[in-house]
Amino acid sequence: MYLHRSFQLWRRLARSHALDVHFDLGLRAFEERDLERLKQNRTAIALLPEGGMGSLEYLALGWRLAWLEERHEDAVETARAITKLYPEDPDGVLELSQILSDLGRAHDAYDVLKAGVESQPDDPDLWFELGLVAERLGKDALRKKAWRRVWELEHEQAPERQLFLPEELFIKTVEHTIEKLPEMARRALDNVAILVEDYPERWIVDDDVADPRILGLFDGPPLPDEHSTSAVIEGPARIYLFRWNIDRTCRSEAEAIEQVEITVLHEIGHYLGLDEEALEIRGLS
Image: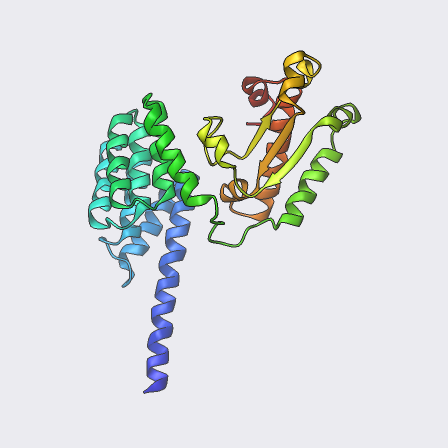
């Protein structure tokens, strides 16, 4: 009896693993716009005992299939069905709002996210996306409220998974990035404080400087204005790097290292006087 139960447990775990594998492969196929592979993995999920045509994974690949086939309204309806069948799953709300935003239906996305935060008020991802849509719609008061809520939920909460870059490795990556700069640029940074923090301080959100998930921030006079009267009042330039936010955007250690390098160079670019357009041209946005 014990061996039989163990075998049953193993089979359940194996089927569950198969579901995860096919779903992950389906997501990858969607990112690569590989329609045939997406169909194959969706069909495989339909045949699994833990999957089926009504499963969350099957439906999630379903709207992606419709999107790649440019059946956009079908994608919307499938994503909307997910939010009704699985109301406790915030990803369904996020995906539906993203589809609507991509179709230029920001007001519909706003309605979906507003209902989402009302039913799940402690989900920072829903609040953050609501802030983005509110910004797009010019609802500044709501944007500030949404992003303040994100800060309240996240500022003392490290990412759930283990960070790709422990603090020591993060700092070494910053140092190596600076070491690779031309000597003239390195000398220009002598008067700049580079600060590594886990998460933005509240003033960044309250003073409407940036959103709470900003990766880095340059604060102070840029190099061309460093000797002006206003610069003396502002104090020395500072570059902030936010470890948790950078890590949350990445899926591997290599990605995290690359993002640290990009963020460091982006903020140094601001110090040197480059605007966002100039940084984007250089691939630093």
